[in-house]
Length: 184
Image (cartoon, rainbow, N blue to C red; front, side, top):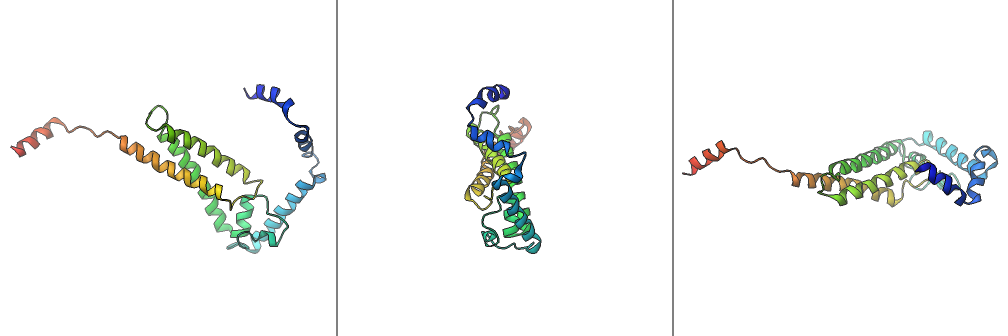
């Protein structure tokens, strides 16, 4: 299916996209690529200079004309290495929570199709956030934390739904007889 999409879809892609791909071979000539490398270099120099607390949220632009265009470098340079660790663990835990919610509400159970579909969507959004973090400085944007929060909420809903659907074992007949004997 992917090959068919590529074969039939590639003629629909604008020429500007193909031109942009050509710059990968000679990135030194591309102003955007060289500027991004300069910003990354500035961030990598700020991290050892301010490893614990960073330079402050959104203060990277005091040292450079733009954001570092990398969420992980942004967190490390602006808020410090401990915050980078927290950020990465938060994203990993959110991915786990979305997968856990998906597993707990799989379609074969037929008990929570909304949670299953929502957890799949949130998982895909989180994957996009993790990947785009390498090329955009969006670590402090609200949609990152909304997706993380939704993943945790979906996991909680899935666990509560599963717990509510657990059927208790009936009391064995011996215990029922004993209870009746006590009553009588």
